[in-house]
Image 1 (tube, rainbow, N blue to C red):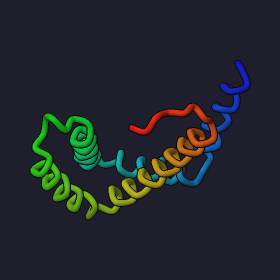
Image 2 (spheres, rainbow, N blue to C red; image 1 turned 90 degrees about the vertical axis):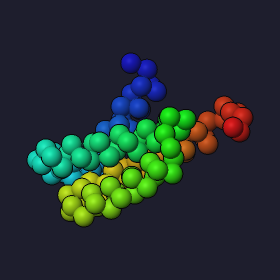
Image 3 (cartoon, one colour; image 1 turned 45 degrees about the horizontal axis):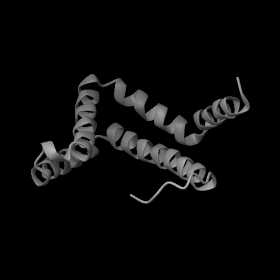
Length: 112
């Protein structure tokens, strides 16, 4: 294993040891205990992902309205609300880490 791989594994372990990840795991565990809720949450997350990544295949206004209504309903479930908050915080951490690496390593990627 080279030094980059070793440091990458260390970074992964540091993230897994963080409060962000522990909170995410705890909240996920609570949602998993409720299969019907977990199914609704998974479908919501999949639809949201598809909306952002398959723009040509959906009516964006109609889909946005549906997702917003479903989001409000799901947020009323305390375990889902906690999970979505924890997932958001973990994703922000991962994005921030990625941004720091990208800014520090000058690959000179052109603006899109």
